[in-house]
Length: 286
Image 1 (tube, rainbow, N blue to C red):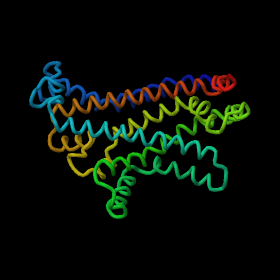
Image 2: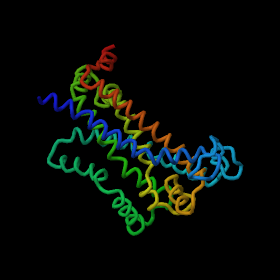
Image 3: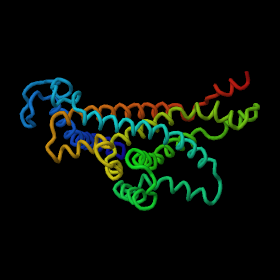
Image 4: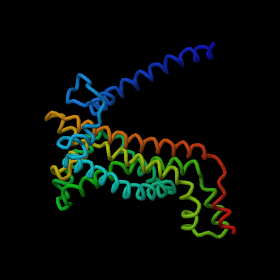
């Protein structure tokens, strides 16, 4: 009887889930549709065209310098955030995983604060810190970068720590028994096993940084530090053009690709979880 009820409820839950997904992506599909419209109308579709991507020499994405600046700022900020947040997060995850003591529980809890804190609160706090406490920090990209690194660091720690918990410490102990130093065990054994988690966390950091609006807007100092979300918001208030929708489509595709790669990496990590991986140990014995 219980199995029958479970099977009966499964199609209903699946239908509700798909309805929610379709409702969520409907505005995105509308924006994408406008970007491929040959005319400027948002209500009537004239014909399929790439005019707003590169066809119009006066108003297309390819020829609009302000859109180029916003895209460059976004990709530069996301790239620097990945380069800084990922190694710091990996190092902190390894340290927190091995830390044993009364203060370790509190430290692990503090790492979750940026994730559970509303982003508007986090953005206001960073703005107050840089405008009143640490006024010597350069404006613009530097402040945005510090804000993005601070916010995304926790994602790296959480993802990598989950992988560390699944790996355990037996592989490093075996490497130490075979004569490897602590650093060799980390470099030759632990880091290769953490590769899927590191890659997944890097893609999550990239997607989070690219899509961020609140922190970027609070720490932005003008058009020179304007990112794509800020540009789209400003354009929508002033009357956006289909070229803005084209920019949003391009960045959305880039974000989906990053999230998809992260999902594939996490799937590979889950497949390898619990499996014996002694390739590195064999290398130490040769």
